[in-house]
Length: 217
Image (cartoon, rainbow, N blue to C red; front, side, top):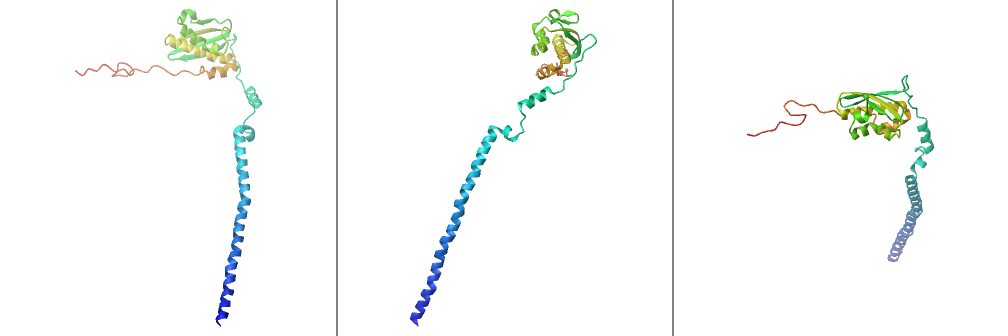
């Protein structure tokens, strides 16, 4: 009886120990196999993504197709509608310019660069060279110096304000005579009316900001 029990115990113990040993390597191999197969597949898209990002940064407009070509840009500029030329019966362009308290009425026409302000030459009316430089700025930025005669009448303000008003009027008139120059003059800011004016005096103060001298005793 003792021998039968021993044989039964050994028979029962042997399959229990053998089955997990044979099954364990199978599960480990099955777990290891997908790892080795998936790793190259995961690395390949990552490398492709890197190359794509580099190429996108290098030439983003060409890949996306959103950036317009140079030819398309030139066509868009050339096909942009221009304003019509505005001339009076005498072939002159007229405009009104303003600066501070001064208002200028300006007429321009092709000529030799003669500027007349209130019936006088610009060298006589605007004796300071800086004022004459202000007047000639619209012609200098458009390469039209000495090509137009200017007739202007100015009222109000001082010499500095009047020079700015004539400059504003010349810029407006030049854009009307040659509409293709409007973009150049506008980019320089000459078509915009300068709204800066002197600040008013306040009561209880000597000037706009200046206070009366304070004496403690």
